[in-house]
Image 1 (cartoon, one colour):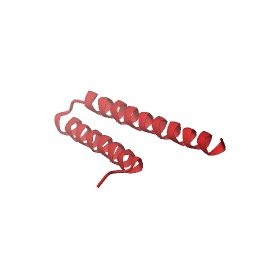
Image 2 (tube, one colour; image 1 turned 180 degrees about the horizontal axis):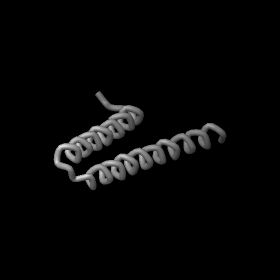
Image 3 (cartoon, helix red, strand yellow; image 1 turned 30 degrees about the vertical axis):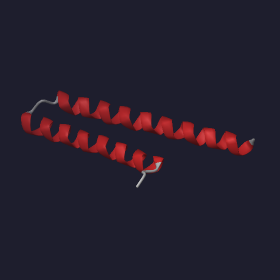
Length: 67
């Protein structure tokens, strides 16, 4: 079964959220607060990148439909 782009989009952002959760819990347990900052930056980068890719795909589809 082939995954659609929307499925990949949700899976990648969810994985980024789980990685952030793991880093946040590790930061809480160990007291290394810098891990929380690393997790926030990582999750933000994943979310912004995926949103940008999604917007580019929508823009291409809109242009193709207008031709």
